[in-house]
Structures are given as structure tokens and as C-alpha cells.
Image 1 (cartoon, rainbow, N blue to C red):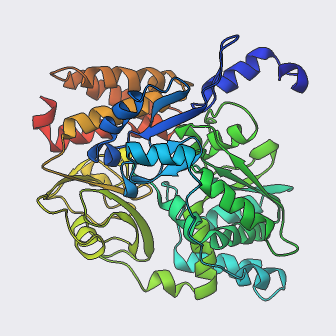
Image 2 (image 1 turned 45 degrees about the horizontal axis):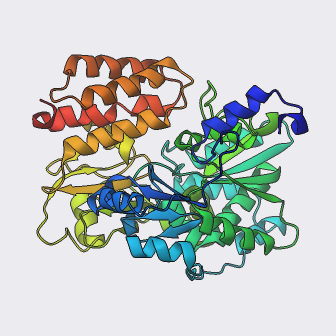
Length: 479
């Protein structure tokens, strides 16, 4: 490969060794017939993922490689696994064996859409300024976690000299997050239309869609839908990742699209002057683009007339854990955890009561049951957490919060890109301390301060929320 692409061997090796789903084989070593990845996210561990991993390892199949995956985006179907390139929902030993040998499962048909919003744009019925004004009136913010106003971001990119590009970030990897999977599964044309409108408003010449490697079924679906795009649509290049959570950070994603290690760039994520291939680049999350299509189709009132507890709009919540009906819930922005569980998830599981929850995935921090702020941007920070991409994981009296915190700390240590010292060493040191019977609280506090102040990207800045929130709200687990 180095000779073919006129690269140094070290460049090829450093990229191949960076991504979890690449395998560097020794001379003469045979590649495994298939790799079985068992999800190790909190929802899957609740449902017996560890026992499934042990059972698969004990099958005695030397040609199969069994490994733990950080999260594969099927938290509402826990436990979950990937049998080669086949996702297995509600995984068991027999289900995984069947997935390896049987036909692929039937894929539900998504809701069709006629791309009428994009057609109105290119036909001159909807102007660029009117589209931007509609998004501003709705108050739409980036749904990838940062919450930056979408229309302002579009204006910033459109003001830069062309040629420009649009990138769709479909690399959700936070444990507990699966909303992007939901929107691509159920409404791929809406997502693609949002990307087409973004390209039209910013006068971008092409779109790149970066899909996480754990979604092979969605890769096939998107390939079909891209081929069926209306005539005159700009090219959409579908690219898949190779197993790196940090590539959900948009500058790391751009580095990965360029064929390099996914190392975040040292700049604010919304500054796009030197984006993909050195061109001004607009990066938007899947859910953001879904709402772009719907808002410009149905009007800003879709958002402004909704909301709870002083907040407006709609948003999706990825709910997993100890609830009767997990899944993606499109609900009023700002409802509380009790409202979300009771009104949208059919309540807690029988025999379980709410003890704690993650309002924003692994990096959002733990909150106890009695603290119930609105689940919205800016409403959780005073309690030491944040909403992020609204990955809500619900825990009961049956769950060991200390062990869950240790697992999440190990997740961040494993997923750190290693570029900056505070994150590379801080995540590992914190995880080591949390494995001990008694935590060194002063050292953990010191690590949290350094990581938040000096890490390059959001991974190192947010990772301390895991242990800091547990110490703050559940001191009995940290003693």
C-alpha cells in the first residue's frame, strides 16, 4: 500500500493501527473467518452481555475472533452483537450462530419522501435567505451534542470563499446513543434531503457522508437511497469509519475522511475555513439534517409550538436501560426524566425504581433520581452534567453505579486518540484509580481539572464527568 500510494510505510502503519476494526497480521498469520463483536455498553451489560461474550468465547471456534465492542448503537435491543457484518438484536448464542450461517435479516422499509423541499430550492420557490430565516425562526441547534445554532453555522460557511463541501456526521459512538441509526433506518430520504438543502444553501459542490463501521446494514440502505436521488442532485460520497469514537468530533472526522488518523484539530469545531481537503466545510449531524428537511417542509411552528418546562421545540431522546419501552422518542424538548419515562417509555420495568440516569450519554454524567431538571441544552450544567446528544440511560436499584462508572472510564481510556497528554494519560490514570477499593478523590479531582483545561477536544474535557458526577451525587460509591 505504501508503494502504491507513494507514502512512507510508517504512515500506513500508523493509520491502520489507529482504528479498532483494522487488523495487522503477522507474517503467515491467517485472518479470522469472522469477528464477533459483543456490545459492552451499559444497557447491554444490564442484559447479560458479559455472559454472552463468555459463551461465544467458549464455543471453541478457532477461526472466529470474539471481542468486546464499546457500543454498537443497538442499546434498545440489548444485548446486541455484530456477527461479521450482520447486526444481531437481542443477541443469544443461537442468534449469533444463525447470523453467521443464515440469510441476512429482512430490513424494514423506510418511509419514502419526494425531496419536495430540495426541489423548491432548486426551482427558485424557496430562496437561500428564506431557508436560513426559517431555520433561525425555529431555533434549530446542532443535535450532535454541541448545540451550536444551525443557521448561524450555515451562514459562516456560506460566507467563506468556495469551493465548499458538506459533511454528514453519522459516526455516533457515545454509549447509549442510537438516534442517528433510527433516523437513517426510518427516514433516510429526509436525512439526505437535509444534506442536499445544506449543500444548496452553502453552494457546496459535493457531500460526504461518514457512517460508523458498526452500521453495515445502514451502509447498504444508504447506498440504495443515494443511487435513487433526484436528477441534478450534487454527488454524495458514502464513506465508512473503521471503529474510532473520537471521529464523532468533526475535525477528527475530517482527518479520517482524508485517510489519516482521526486526530482532532486544535481549533473550535465550527470554524471551517480549512475543512475537508483544505476547503470550507459544513459539518452537520444526522438528526440536525433530518429536522432541516421537516422544518422547511412543515414550518418553524413544528418547533416553536412545542416544548416543556420553559423550553421550546422537539428533539429525539435515545432511551435505554431499566424502562419498559426503550427506543428513540421524539418528544417535547425540556421534559423531565420522570415525564420521559412515564409518558414515552411506559414506565420503569416491573420491580425496578429509578435510582440514577445519564441524561447525555457517558460524557453527560450521572444524576440521581430526585434531581429532575429539564432535559434540554443549558439546563443540566448546574448539576455537573449536560444533555449532549440526549442519550438517556436509566438505572435502578439493581445496577452497580460504581462498576458502571469504571466501565465508562475504561471506555474513554480506550477511545482517547492519544494526541494530547492530558487526555492520553489522564483517562488511563483515572480508570486505574477507579479500579481500586478506595478512590483517591484528590487525585481524581486534580486529573479532572487538568483534563478539562488542557485537552484538545471534547473527549478529554468531558470524560471527567463520569467520576466527578458520581462523587458529587453518590459519594457512598466512591469511598
